[in-house]
Image 1 (tube, helix red, strand yellow):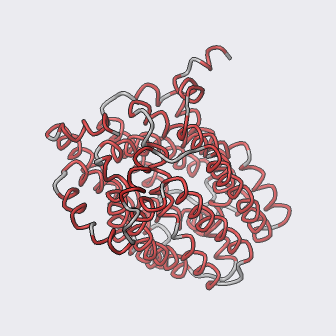
Image 2 (image 1 turned 30 degrees about the horizontal axis):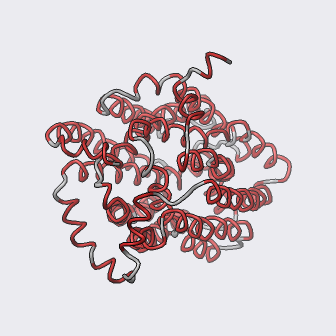
Length: 425
């Protein structure tokens, strides 16, 4: 136990104060229910009669509405403040959709839920500001690692979902998981609100925007866009955000369909994979990430992209009912997530001007969504031709990501002033 408390992540966890503490400590209340239902959403839709194309269309429609919500997210975050915006839009974007998904009967329920769920882009902006603005930049990798770890606590609950599906069948079980998510997430939102306070920069922006309406604030985005275009490091980081967004969209929508319809893994056995994923990710974070957290991002991220590519190559070549190879594919991708995700999150923070963080993040998210939104529909069309085609698309996207890591390493060296922004955050 004494050795465990000496682990850098545990030391960071025990020493967290203020908003970082309030955000990190409550995160499992969101991560556990989300990760319990997430592996089954696609097959839940299929069982209720939706087609591959409709599932892909829902992903694209959701992303389309996220363009608008991400665009206004910076103005809302500045106007309401980081804390208040986070609470209001967390409830709207998660508590309400999980309730709709729980009672869904057909495509139209899922369409309405996708539109409402798109509001999470507002809270993604406001919560990110709430988390990092008053946090020591040197702690960012540790803090983001703890956020990822908290979501993986689901490892100890994932087998329960498979057991419930075996007992009660897929649809009743997933409905129950959505009801559970609605309750747990709502508790989380109240707790986060109670344990945090408005950031210093948030108070400044509330005062500065007190007499402005949203349209006036949005009209100022042109100048903010100019700042982004003049910051090469931010542009390359934007490219990496786009790569991960496309990969996550395609993988999230079609992995379970490939596993059940192409590899013919029974639905009730899918729980094996999130359990293994979460368990290995916890080990990876605790054993490997402390060794790489202070390294330059290039090599760890390249290893991460190599693992992603290897996992996808294996996935599209797995024979029917081969549980072991599917497990290897999942574990390769599992080890890639910490290497790419936490370091990219840190890059987003340190390459963004802290004085304009909310509006710059809003524009970055809008650009990512606009370019990601067609890929749900594209992947749906590909999946109707062959279940493996969406993952071949992923391979191309990941190859672009690996190239961007090389470019990011060169650009950040040539633009050292961007790194100095970390000291101002």
